[in-house]
Image 1 (cartoon, rainbow, N blue to C red):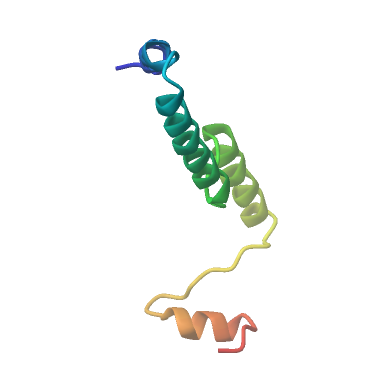
Image 2 (image 1 turned 180 degrees about the vertical axis):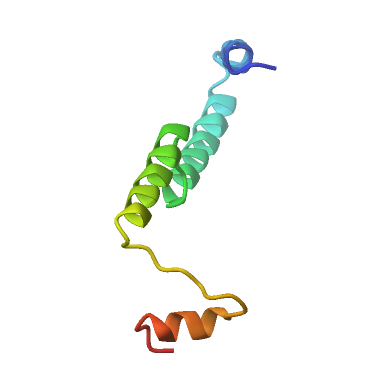
Length: 86
């Protein structure tokens, strides 16, 4: 089902319950929870934001600003070598 089809189905379903105040209150409460959940996820990003982030990282590596783990180096040793007190 495409996003447009889902959108259409949601609006049809809302129209079905629009005359029932109790059901509309339940829907409003649930929608509030869903929107709060979306806002609270700091890792959410659009496809464009994701690829822009990758591009910025590639540019940093090109400028020599990146950090690289050595072969067979564990994460603790890597962080210590880069100045993070662990």
